[in-house]
Image (cartoon, rainbow, N blue to C red; front, side, top):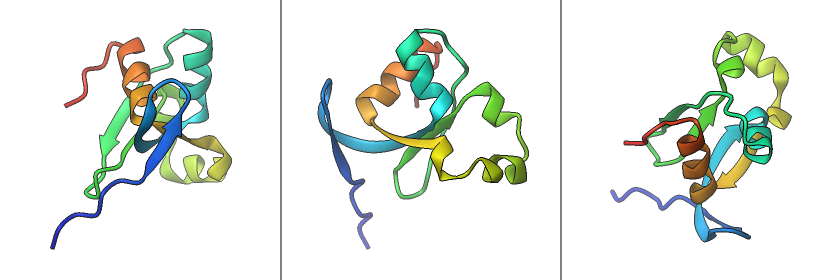
Length: 91
């Protein structure tokens, strides 16, 4: 069975791109230009996600308490820009 394509979002900078998910701290770092760390993964369904150093240091229970408001949807182009800002090369 073929893998379902990752849903697309429209970005003002990168146009139509696959969706990714990051913590709010990474989004803020993209605004300020100050790296906060970039702990990334890619799920079996092809969706990329990442959290900052602070969020990565939390237990799963502590992270869960932060709730859905701690996670933001961004396009893959912005995700790649955030990774590069943190000197991370994605596989």
